[in-house]
Image (cartoon, rainbow, N blue to C red):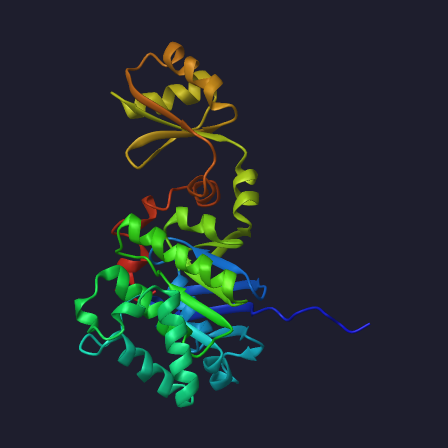
Length: 330
């Protein structure tokens, strides 16, 4: 029987990227391994400075790895760079549209760069504009578009040449929640229409729910990788968040009287326990502190991040993150 096993859309082994040397050496990516099946939507999660954008830049042949290997759409990102570039679409974190050109002109320029024949380019431009619901604005200058419309046009541009793998680097950053949902609706529709592989980086945990598999990256390393549901199941605890009149005293009494370790996260005393609803009454009777509010939530991907890194993703976005050290280059 013929071998029907499909080659992974993305295959990475021991991939590293370092900048500087000696005492100034910064390890942005520290020997990661991953495999993304063709047709998957794969989420790459982590705070600013985790190494997500540096990884995507290596996979898209923008930066060479320091060591390790990576293959995209079956081709080596260093040795077969041109072959990789022909088969990928890329939506950058920063907007790169020409503001003075129309939507159609931006797409036409991209199609010309990829050498699409005139007829094929016309057909693809019509298809992708329809896909992102911008057909009626094709003749308008991009500078007249809202942020969400520009993002949709950038996604359309990344699809004009029919790539096998679409890379989206923080595609919804800076957008309002309604527009973020709309962008994901377009991505779901794209998956229904095509067999494209989508690789998306984000620091929005709720967006990871849209992915088939996710990897959580922190300090240049992949700390855990699985389906969203499997990761949430692995935590197996409820999360209780308290606002009190004395947080340090509360943390100490939780340890002494209930044998529960707690910590401060996002300005609240936070603890992870099984059957949180049963623990709440004991908090009021045994802590002898004023509890101003209490919330109990089932495991979320933010809880997964905290379980594997020791903090929430918001805690990781402070001024001491690598983003500050690395001057915005991740």
